[in-house]
Amino acid sequence: MAKQTVVVDPVTRIEGHLRIEAEVQDGVITGASSSGTMVRGLEIILQGRDPRDAWAFAQRICGVCTLVHGIASVRAVEDALHYPIPQNAQLIRNLMIAAQFVHDHVMHFYQLHALDWVDVLSALQADPAKTAALAQSLSDYPRSSPGYFAEVKDKFTRFAASGQLGIFANGYWGNPAYKLPPEANLMALAHYLDALAWQREVAKLHAVFGGKNPHPNFVVGGAPTAISVSPAALHNGVAAG
Image (cartoon, rainbow, N blue to C red; front, side):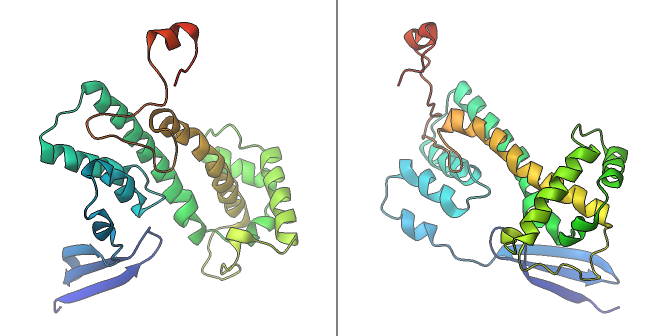
């Protein structure tokens, strides 16, 4: 078989524009490359600014994968200055990165692409008891009860009846390409909604160490903190400013 080049451009369901090229020989991918095709112009925005402020601008390239671009910018400045940071600052940064890593995986799975496979309106035909049995066969998630899924179904039934589907509008609901049964669709929809609430809890770590989320604060040479660690504040149980 002749050598082929397969191009997928654009790749969807990511935060930006991506192009994938794959070299295929006899049905086997022998080489692949990816490239971002969107020019966002942050390099132009940063020209002439204090490098200590670069993280605040670079981080805003994306509001979903927040933090990581700020960290990369701070590290670039510190590397250019040959400036080692304190160990405790590195630990704080690592905690924030780890929280973002967990948060981003859940957001990507549920909020960014899960509903490509889920027929949302099909969930309205699901049996909550059968949905609970399906969920319990897959994991020991404590909320997988018939009552829980009945509540989600009732909530979404009212939502759909209003005619205002919001983020669920403009889907290809009912298309035969959707293969999941109604019960699997209801389970996925319920977990989608749970994931929204769960994200608030994970983001609290960024708020503690970085002051806010998205786009927590950073400083070149260390890590910021919104909580005073002075003896007076600690002994009095007060977060002094």
